[in-house]
Image (cartoon, rainbow, N blue to C red; front, side):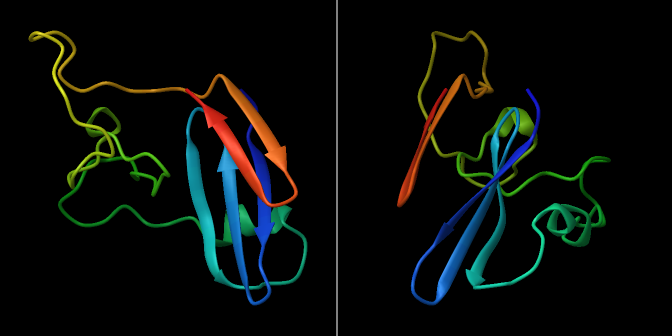
Length: 103
């Protein structure tokens, strides 16, 4: 899936989400101006010391299977099978005041 930036704007805040295999929060805070294409490169995070070799994205749905060491967004069991599920985006509906992401 190609990566797409989606922007949700409030009166004083802005949420920019990048959609690819998963939904990653690129910016959440005060409004920023300028071309969104440059945001991704400017906001790349370095790999933290003592972590995985790849950066673990701050997603809307944290998953142990993607390398998140904190609490996952969804917990449960599947009778000993697939201990760390990984969800992928299958459909996105974008509205003027929100998005619906189906996995």
